[in-house]
Length: 137
Image 1 (cartoon, rainbow, N blue to C red):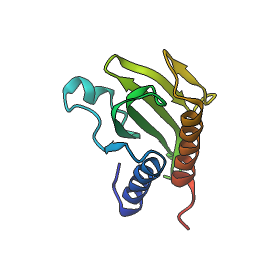
Image 2: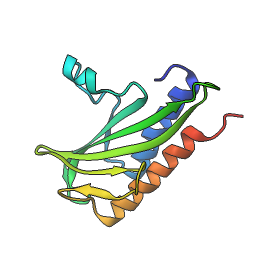
Image 3: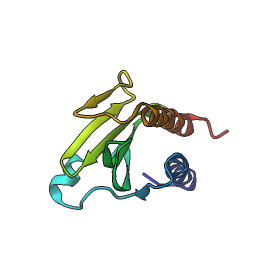
């Protein structure tokens, strides 16, 4: 999706926003394995970024975070907008929780991040949507 400098800069800004709030995280711009089954699942209209923590974070209740920024391209005017952010937390046991900005912004899953981390994460999602949807004029 990083087809031009502006878009690539916005992806880098997302990584920096996350690392500003959570400096221990290590970013992964290619969070998927490169096999046929995985490639079938990857949404071509999204940006997927992984973040990994050293060990399992008690406040996150996970070790890895997958962020998927979903886009919609208007067929009439060609504009591209971010329509939502999906965030999931994983441990060695698999997905532990999920947050979607598409519906009600609530966490669902076996566990949930702490309230403080949850609020920071929701604010991060708001910043992502603002970043990708603000006009470049």
